[in-house]
View (cartoon, helix red, strand yellow):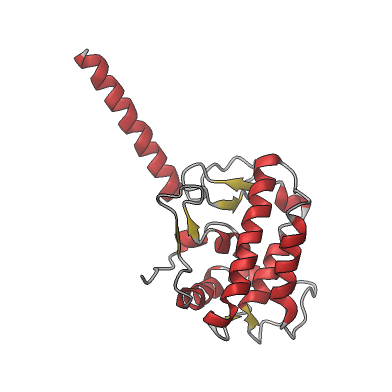
Length: 202
């Protein structure tokens, strides 16, 4: 099934989190599904991410040589990122048991890359040339280890997506107020109405 890669799919705040969130409803075995089940979606996601994550990437476009070929590396980084940072968000600290797997996955993403990163103002390198998606994904994932970023990681109580809370007072609750926030409000309103009706009809 072709995915519509809308702005809502990029509410994680960073490329690595948006990628982790391509598994929908993690923790719900009956309803979960993977938007990357079709490897072609990896290339389509990278194309959309080049636009929606332009600020993070310093306007450097993402390149996918072969979605099928890079899928194992992309999925490995994605799962290691979700495991490490979902745990860190829940527990308030990074589990060292999950760190080696995450670092190995990121190393695999960078292994075939022939580029330079980390210049002042250009964390992803020269914006003139594309960067391999798996390499950019690794760089984005590693950036999550910064203390100031770790402290702002959240799990949306509606969809369970990971996101960075960049609100001034760190009080953001939903990954996307227009989607998850409104759904929760509607759900609470429905429950209140049903409870009121039960009391009325008792």
